[in-house]
Amino acid sequence: FHFHDGADVTQQDLLTSSTLLAVSAIVDHQSAALSAFADVAAAFSCEALKADATPFNLMDSGDGHTSKDEVAVAANIRVLLNGSKSVGKEKIRSIARVPKVHGSVREQAKAVHSRMRVELNSGVKGVVVGSEEAVCTVLLPLAAALKELGECSFARAKSNLEVIAGDGLKFGIGEVFGKECSAEDGLSGGFNKAVNLFLGKEYGKFAHEVFVLLGLVWKVVAWEAVTAVAVLQAAELNEVIEGVKEIKVEDNAKEVEKKKKKVVLGKGTSSILALIKERLLSGREIALGTWVADFLSLLDLAKPEFNEFLLKVKDVVESNESRRLPKIPKVVILSSFGYLYDFDYFCFLGVL
Image (cartoon, rainbow, N blue to C red; front, top):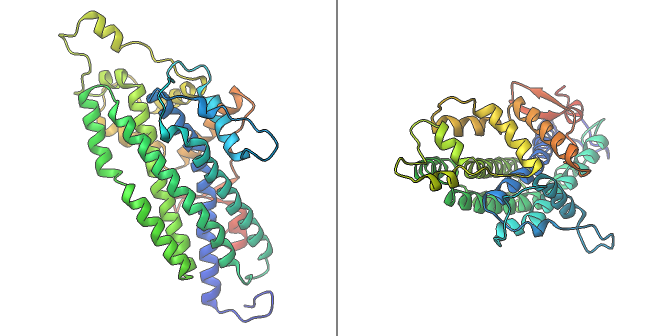
């Protein structure tokens, strides 16, 4: 094998470069999916926490004073919350930061995608000198943006837990959350480990660590969605989930009526919630653990059901207003790995 400039390259060099590009390709695809769904989870949290939605009143002035990605995030969430009676006036920092934090992830994910296209297209006939450095240079700011997203989402998830109605439901979900999503330290530790690997020029291990960090952030965002939906659907969940009762016999009629009062969500969030309920609730009694596990399974990136779900989310946003979620790339499912991969990437790598 030879580099384009004529320098010799060993089989190990080729393998290392191909592995790094393959891992980076997965990060590219999954960061786009995360960027899209994170907006949905944040919109649910906004309603669950009765948060002030004015931070999403951003417009593109065209003079460079606003980020197009921040404006796009704000526009998507406005679509999701359109018509909602559940937003309020609570000033919540983790909600107010959504446009900037989510916009940063979008911006860095686009940079990674652009760099991947350049490196893979230029390397069709061989291995290009400097590909690892070039790719990892854009992966580093993505890792920083992912860390911020994870911390912001984790804060919202904890806030959601605090306002779940019904002691049994709150304790049950909180217990599982504590066991499976104690991710706050992991986010900082994972990012610091990635930075050290980057500084040490261990690019293959660095790319893998970014992939691990992305998986941790994805788990946090999924839990944010779980906790927010638990707040919004507490009355129904307490009646459906076996052994959990929100409304006691001694409650007077007025208290019962207040607890059962219909929650009016946004047009977008209500449509997406209907998709989730169709999968999770069918009028039968289910265990709390089963409901949580099924919800998390629905949001599992490694399963084709999630790709179908995300496409439906995209349709919901597009049908409500003109703003669009990030375009879903054409993918092929490799069952032996269990992930969704971009077809073009692996044509170059010789995997397909």
